[in-house]
Length: 526
Image: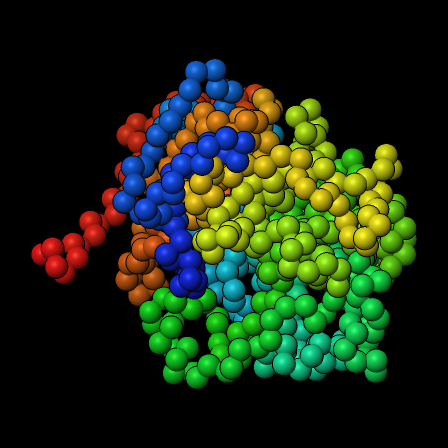
């Protein structure tokens, strides 16, 4: 594949443009609600950048994040100073980066010429980069049949669990019981998970895989595969959950969208709606040998058994928990398995599900960034949830009497007091810190902040950096509105082994901050 940096094309959701955010205050535990601010800017445009809040007694550590529109990952200290950077040969719209014990970074990047797939979060490559930015491993997982996207997890043994799309033809979808009005002309791209053993400089061996395609149920056509009652099979995914295919767009209209930078790379009229589940996060629990992943399109999180053989993972029996590759647990939207109604939905386009690590307050619980929570005012907001799953001592989950998985309510929740000023309609992330505080990435605006258990903000930083990657013809990329966004940011404790004996002094000079051009005044004020 050609070795040139090719920047992503991002399709913006027009409905989100007016729902934007500037500041977060307190949380839902406060007694008195102030009036909402008059406006909010989800993308954080024209607001002060850099370190905006700090406190005494903060945990010693650093924050790591990918620089948008660049191949860089920065490490900053608590003062907001860049102390280190890793540099790849490619950039990505959705950088997931994980620091290793030797100071290297494992991250995903956008392959320069991956074919077929479109829909956001496209990657296609997973790389290992040394502390001094030498390429140690560069693995491509991008063909016309599959593409790695969004996120991956590094297992204790060094293996990689990666989310990927796989292509299914319209004929295959029909045979599996999908309704005709829910099948795009290009077919569907359901998700799978592959376990990769890195080999050499560019190789990787797939030693285990799981496909959502193997765990479907449908009550539409008795003559097709997967027939059954979804209400009786919470362990399976109803293949007819989701939206119908929109009317076919003209090629001329699609060409215009591409020219305007408003269509995903590889988007065609025929594949609109093919990217069906959009799984955007994956984590591994070594103690349980379980995998959790998130589907914002379904507004659900799922847990599956990793202890299975590949054959068992494709079936319904076997493995440590006896259920093969079927769902052990799911939460967020029981309507998807025909229980409850809209009032029972708990998640709304969420991101970044993960277990709280051993030794941290809430260990064993799950944290989730819930992006688009509806409100009585019809203006969505975001919230951070901590969930205590209904699990016995052996790691088995159980259904409640009403046929759904608990909990009914989160163990802990963070949201803005006004349910207005904390909002990121997409991307974003959250994780628990050693001291019990919670670190939050408000992704669309690249606002990183730390909150205490009672919702007090003790540290806040707005990414001021943006790279200068160009289109293949040399044209600049329009920085508006996705100017500073961050798919993920991570708090790295000072005692992390990857930082041992490393030089962590502020770079001199510091990288140049990006200055967004001033907005022109309204016509009546000129």
